[in-house]
Length: 468
Image 1 (cartoon, rainbow, N blue to C red):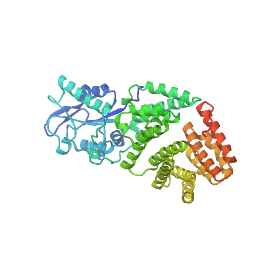
Image 2: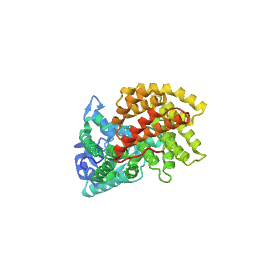
Image 3: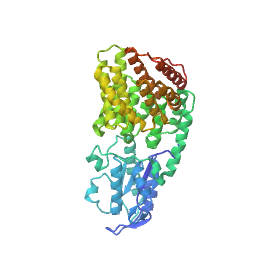
Image 4: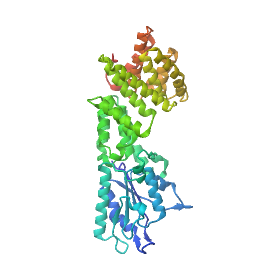
């Protein structure tokens, strides 16, 4: 699809500029047109050449945007200009991968930069010869191909030194220089919206698969386009397609924390042989690298919760251990950021499921904290599904059937994906089972479950019975 290729920004001078160290006047326009631009096109990327405007010695916002947000950067270090090295430093702070320095071999690079894998090229009287242009084209294309299709190698010294250094991930909308990419991305998102407008998940999936085919080589597609497609597959519960798609991602995108979290979620939901164990390893590695995070612990908690339900159905003695792990993960996720109610409400539900006095006491401790967290988001007045689903679950826990009845229609109408409905449905089933064990009535909860069953069936395009 035109306009959806990954962007390669070229940070280099325009026109003819003298190299003060050697006295050679370098024709950068000739170098660009004869070697750099053809190499980038040959790699399947979209070249964007930067301007050199300055205002009061400060780089304009467009330059920052290009350096921070481009999928790939080629930086020409020939002139040894402090601005160029400053810009390279910005890029190395923002991205661990996909930066390719080049330089004309008319003098050596400064010591600190000579350690970076830079591509040299040869000039005669400030220009590339035909042979020199062909060599630079070949060398640059090879390096870009390596970055696109090979195993991701950190080319930033900062990320090499500090593996856990946080990359800067900003939306392209923050800078006007990416207006074309934003427009193409919006057009792509509109296609995804149209695909998700079909009646059933099966029809939506077929439309999404056609969109994926239209992208061509996924290794050179824009990163945000691939992520949008991944999340669209999630919305139709296409776990196989999510996993297959992330397998095809370029390596630099595979390392993205959100991509890894979503891949783990898909593996857990698919639950083929060893899927759940792989999901657990991914999530635990993220915790080890990045520390406590509600999203990571929330998905890890769900992984343990699904294992618990599976073992419980089999009558396994190991079920209680999985339940303990799920409660611990959800609790740690909520404690990592008490503003994020999602792991908190799940911890409460599972504490009630465990049902001993100590667990019920802990559930009572968490209940007002989670209620306060969701109240800050608008509670029953919110238009977000997860806010409303949390209010609904808290209403069931607190026997507030009037509030549950008021929130239920809004929650069902707000849900955009069948897996979201299924998640809340499963939690309500756990609460129903706990009420039955305690000898409490379930009539009001049964009504809500019936509506969730109906809505789930509508979204899947089939009649679905609630799990036993």
